[in-house]
Image (cartoon, rainbow over the protein chains, first blue to last red):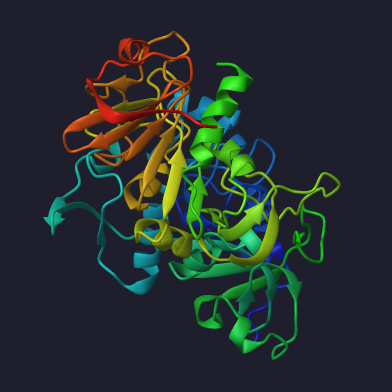
Length: 231
Length: 219
């Protein structure tokens, strides 16, 4: 089996206007920046993006926002992003804010074939408005529905031609769960390794979830062997 | 609020961290508490970015772009650290596995309702993890200034800002006082040195019962 597509452009060529795309990342970590750049270059518009953050002015999803390619975001925490603020203020971007854990679990439900779940998070707050609420054992829960997407953009440290993936440190974040919840999951890998060279016990995302593997051309972060461990 | 006062709140908040605790510290004053964990207390910091067992970087270390805390600041791993996905991070949080979460606050009220994510008129930057943390941790302590920058009380009969969670707060620590949320309402447990009970009551809109063993805050 060989899911490798050597060319970023080719890997995203079938994404059309109006598509819903999940994009991994937490803060500056684990952003599929090469796939996002390729989507900027392709100019696909009217996108719905599901992501934890909205990138910065010049990294990640911020680039798509600046290009006016995004119609709607389902997002948890946008931080300080002036482009995002301006688009929202001028009514050019629809927003659905989601508590971070609820976002993760909605995606998990989407990938795991669940019809939804009841969470205590957000009960009695704006996040629970217009949602069914139930109580069990004296505790209140809110019904949250699953999320799926046409495509998922994943960033992995290593991947093989079977689509098996390994992540690194907190660059893992939403990537493994998003890989499970899209019709077509495209993984951008920092390092493409030979089939059989990854330890099967250490694979985070099994290849069944991944349709395409593409080597990332450029990584904003400097390569580093291991995180600092304080003694 | 002076740097000195913020540090006082953080120092007192650090006393909430007990041996063996898994702890999540929110940004701002709560994060500052990590510096003042009492000697001999071994606790593990947990971040929703997907790491447990971390601490500040050494001065000479520039940090690792793949390793941040929830405020996106680079951190260092401590021995025994482990790394996990966002799904796992929130299963830990929501599932009641965190012993303690210390968060900042805009408002807290008599029933332990918390508002700390949205100020009307300001751009909303999202919800992030705070709703999950507030409802999931075994114990939620709010470390915040006693009044707003405009000197208005923040401990109220009823929160007026959009809520983060209903009845989630166990304790509030400010530069003036330590106040517990109980089924009978708010109880004043500790006052700062050289601060009178009257002064705390004046600066608090909610009713306060005074603990019969009222103590002076030790930091």
